[in-house]
Length: 423
Ligand code: PLP
Image (cartoon, rainbow, N blue to C red; front, side):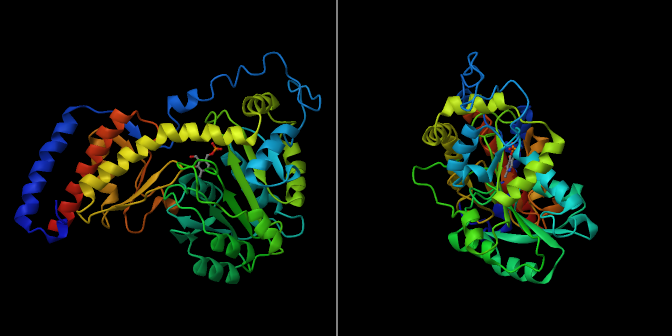
């Protein structure tokens, strides 16, 4: 079907009528589908079958640590080694701790506000603090800022990363800008990966705040759909080379590798930052769940097995992404009322409606029983300035449900667009 913009009003009204009938039909089905969050589906969780049974009465780590007991704040040596290799850092540059990278980010921001980040400069919280928020971005990063009263400055996220001209200009002039959120690989939600040039510029840029930090949330570091994924330049190395060795905190977790909420989380940074963090974390806890670390290391054995495991994830979720992308292309490809991302990995498809339509689309889908991520969630303060962006999370629903949900979504997009064109 043709570009909606070129159709006359009568034709549009005719299409509107047909689509309204379809929409009513969907409503009568009493659907109850949820596509609001990027969760692994049960088949993905089944890939880690046996992980929890792997200890089999043997609770001793390679250095003889009894993992049933207290201690080992920085994580088991074998766990640090495994994830250091995967994140391309040294074992002494990583802490494997807890089950949630988001919790590590939250706590790090809290400590920075209370104590500063380096023992030399004042606690961030002694003056107003701002963070740069490349957007569309991850709503929970923005929630952390809002929670701690950190002012968020939206920076456009492009195909190769944040708009670096703007980032450089802002950080060079404003001392209260203390940080930037980055999801550098298969970003949430647009799926882009930062180019080498962007990574280098982030590492090198001059910041007015001497205690500026990059929060490098590499949540989708190994979540590729293809065998030859887009490489991501090593930011810790780039920061060292740029004489800003302490600038970056790298986060990741196995939430979408093994078990969401019951995996391992990690933070990597310079040895100086890591040592400071260890001292601070020692006040919070006597040690992490080392049994889970041991179980993970025994399950995977080495980095290559983690990569192979990720290929199995890809085999499960790639067909879901293909289904969504094929439906979007077939049904909306020619109509010029929307654009969307075609990710090479990660958990999301980012969809842009015509300006001013996203909220209505999400509401219409909800009224017919399909829950999507709240429109606006991908921007600071939940406000999408042009009301266009919708995050599609295809991983959780089974294929048949996903198909129904997307068919309904596509009907809603067309109805809301026609209404806008006719206005
Ligand atoms: N970071 C990003 C970019 C995410 O998309 C998610 C989950 O969706 C998380 C962090 C949460 O990570 P964790 O489960 O390790 O707290």
